[in-house]
Every structure is written in structure tokens, then in C-alpha cells.
Length: 248
Image 1 (cartoon, helix red, strand yellow):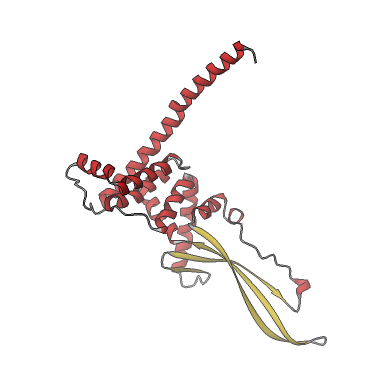
Image 2 (tube, rainbow, N blue to C red):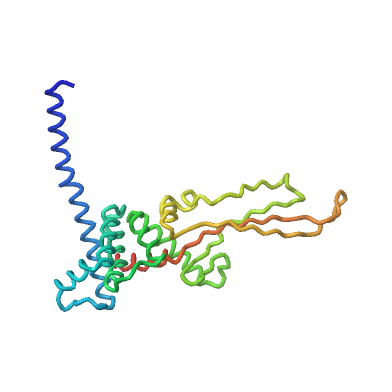
């Protein structure tokens, strides 16, 4: 590359990088930060005020920044917000989840950590899809006639599909027993939610014996049953509760 071309390329790179930093990075970082502090304020209004001097906002802010644990909580939240896939709902949810921790000077529980990962990793459309899925099956869990959907506290277990293999007729049955592909079953949002730790799948096996009588065989048969379930973890309920607040 000749000197003139090199100089022109460097000039273009310098201009583009400055505009990118100002028009893209600064713009969307600022927007996400605004959403975060909006959620933070909403949650703060609902939380107990703890031992911080909230009668003087400056003193309360100083107390937060000078406290090692509280400032670390805020720093971690800032990192999550900057890299949040969601522009609006995720940062708000993060703000709502972080505020009580900052006020009380507490570390997040495992469920809160998973909920914050979901708020960081899922986009706005993903969160809406999660809400639709969660609302549908949480209602089914309340229906005694829906035996395939059960609630265990804040955890919801959905019996998704059943397969079986008969030892006496293996040539009639072909079953591939493997982990359920949540992206294929529910959509790409579910795989991201699984990575965050708020949704999962499981396969359980059961063996059932029976007596068989025929001209060719007289004895016992065995039925191998496989059940695949989708599990909405308690952290999913936490995300949905805060998402509904973020949308209100």
C-alpha cells in the first residue's frame, strides 16, 4: 500500500472509530444505563431503605460508592447492562434486581444470579416469548385437569413427550433417547434461557414388566418408558415478575 493510500485509510479509520464511539457505543450505552436506573428507582421505591442515609441523596450515594460490597454489586451490574442484548426490558430488570441488594448490602442468591444472567443474555423479543410461554404453562399448572403440568413452589415441570420401547417388539419401535433441543422445540430464545439457567430439560426412564402369551412365546415382556420434561426454574418466575413491572 503506497503512503498516500495508507494515510487515507488511517484518516478514514480514525473518523469512523470516533463516530462509532459517539453515535453507537455512547448512544446505546447511555440508553441502557437510563433503563437500568429507571428500574433501579422503581425497585428502590418498593424496597425497605436499609441503613443508608436516604434523607440526603448525596450522603447515600457516597455510602454506596465507599462500601466495597455495594460498589462491587453496582460495578457488576454496570458490566451486565453494557453488554445486555436487550435494549429496554433487560436493563430495567437488572436495575430492579440490583436495587434491593445495594440497599441491604447483600450478595445475590443463585436464583437472582440466574435471573440477572437472563436479563443480560435475552433480547427484548426473547423476554416477551419467555413471558408468553411462562404465562401459558403457569395457568395450566393451576388446573387440576392438566396432569402433565405441575408446579413445585416457583418451579414448573412440563411433561413434554413420552416414548417407549417394547422388548417383545423391538422391530416395531425405534426411539432416539437424547436431550431435547429447546431451540427446535420452543425457539432460539429457549436455548439462550437455558444458558442463563432459568429453563432446562430432563429425560427420565422407567421400566415396566408385563406377562405375554402367544403361540410363539410364553413369558414376560419389558417396556422401557422415556419421558422428556421441560423445567421452568424458580429464576424464570423471578424474571417474569420483574418483566411485568418493567412493562407496566
